[in-house]
Image 1 (cartoon, rainbow, N blue to C red):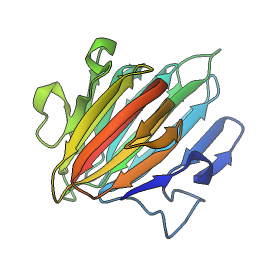
Image 2: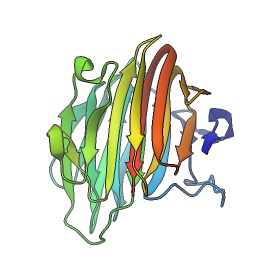
Image 3: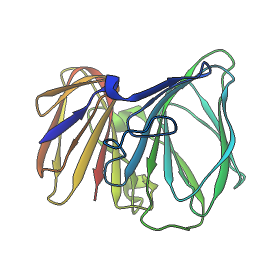
Image 4: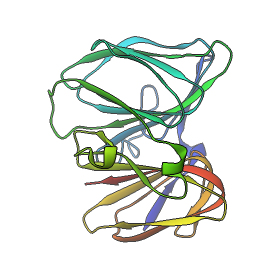
Length: 232
């Protein structure tokens, strides 16, 4: 069975400088029926106004992925890392036993639109860590490109959890399939566009979960950008 989480059912807050949607409970939005899915704890879709952002703040014991859809996001952290995240980049920050970081819209004129994803680690109290990798458009077009995994295989980022994260840019009229093994659990998040998952329509901001083994078929009715999570 595939269970949908529609975009308009998500938590929402507009702070002026930040317009944010929460797939799962986060900050002031708390819903006991939507606390996460397996180790997947947060999917936030954020739009930050030019020059604005999140000042220095701390995290512990969380694997945090940042994926920019439009614009540029500037990152700094207490490990001494500083970078700008652009479309095609995926950043992984392991908070571990504690890290401070800030994120700001790098542009003074354009809004930045990005996803922030939190995955609970298999072990607490690890050393903090950081990675950023660029995945070219051609590696993600009409295929599932592995962008994060437990073992960092195929040039993906390493997350401290039995989870694999795939990204795809699916062109209108194209389809792809993913075989979900028994005992695994999948979450599909549509970032942009429109597609069907085994015949069920998903639009931008929608998510879907399943714990049934078998073939997952994704077909784009319009150009679409998506993430697929394979979770223990």
